[in-house]
View 1 (cartoon, rainbow, N blue to C red):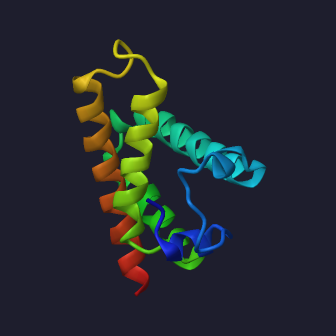
View 2 (view 1 turned 90 degrees about the vertical axis):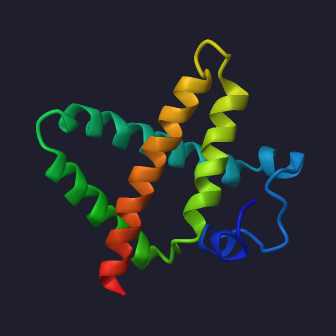
Length: 126
């Protein structure tokens, strides 16, 4: 469920139901959701390329990303709902071979680590 403050930060009315058919067909919502997933996958791809050689660089990137999100008005309490939405979306749109329990656990762990570092970055500005 999208938090009221998150709806406002994304430019949607507070009374919007993110699970409604109307919302899912809303071009603006689809564009923002697609943008989020594209950015997430790009970030993960870049992180995977860097992880083997420089974990500190990945941490610095996530801290900086968290700082930017603080300036955008994203609150730390938004992350759990966003993570749940991400996992639910992957689970609903990929088959069981592509998204089995092991893959789901890996995604959950990865998202937890990413959001943890981004929140640390946000708190550095508070």
